[in-house]
Image (cartoon, rainbow, N blue to C red; front, side, top):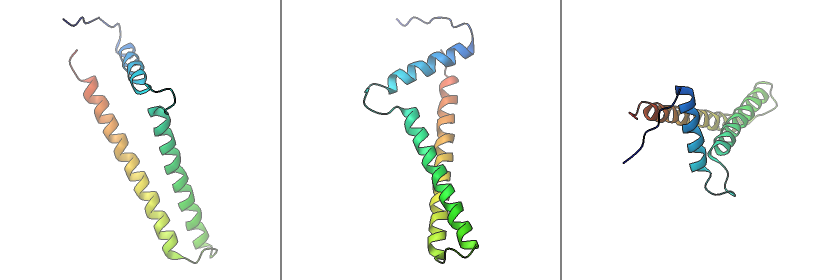
Length: 103
């Protein structure tokens, strides 16, 4: 039989869920954690957007002449942002589903 313990507040419940999730995800000490992987992915998307902005500005100033290169970097940046947004939405949806589960 499963023993259910009473938790004082919902914030402490959230903290316990986060701690257990972190422990479950960090099974291998040499592997990067889920949080660091997500952080790296977000940094990569931000870097892609910065590069896209820089190359667009260079094209507008006449320093870059390859329009195809400009368009491709803009599309890569846009796709990266859309993917990040979709992942965020899925994570939030999963979090809400977990928090709405009966205890």
